[in-house]
Amino acid sequence: MKLKKYLTLTRAGIIEALQFRLSFVVMVIGNLLYLIVVYFLWKAIYASAGTDVVNGMTFTDTLIYLVLATALFNFMEMYTVWEIGRNIQSGKIVLDLLKPMEYRKYLFWSYSGSFVTQFFLTFLPTFIAVAVVTHGAIPMGINLLFFVVSVIMAVSINYSIDFIVGTICLYTESIWGINIMKQVIVLLLSGATIPLAFFPDKLRDVVELLPFAAVYDVPLKFLLWDGISMEPHEPWCMLGFQLFWCIVMLVISKVFWKFSLRQITVNGG
Image (cartoon, rainbow, N blue to C red; front, side, top):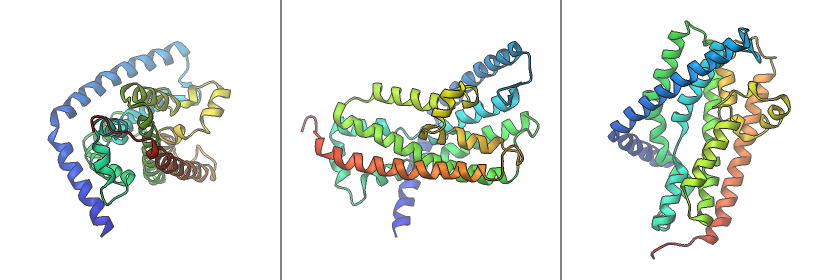
């Protein structure tokens, strides 16, 4: 019965997402312009480097990494911070808290429909296009299974990060600045903007221990894994790293939310 209740929210989310077709077109055009800039920027970087391999990554590897990082971002972005912030400002948060479902779960499953639509409308077409254009540069083996498991945990971690940042809105009643700051930090420290392989060694050693790396860098490493570029234990260690942050961020987000509800104030009511 619980699963049926959650899937009802997913279905409603899919229907809602399909109503805004123009926003999808605008997003696709924006992504294409961004990817054109990324292509020529990194083409120039590799040309100036005078070598086909920089920091262990070829130009093709880097392009695949960054293109699919963008696709993953569109796939996993849930706008949780905006939703929580708007609900706090409008007072709707009180009605949501009265629903017979934990608010954290309700919010996640309400947006789960966007996962389905964004997967089929953005990520999957981008993945296929990249695989064709790069003439099979993406390995098609056991790495895809690891990638799927990794993405599931990345979604959980990313949602927990968003929920924690959204909870801060209970104190600030501000949305835009907090969300922009969150996006900049996550995209930079996760490798979605610049692959972590290009970070200075000492900085990379620190960043790779943070939960942000588990959102984009780890899934993308699995996608580029050819089965021999890692030691046998490394893929399992990477999944263990993600699982650790799944649990830690889940606990932090729940505890922080429970504590922060004491601070709730409703404007205009």
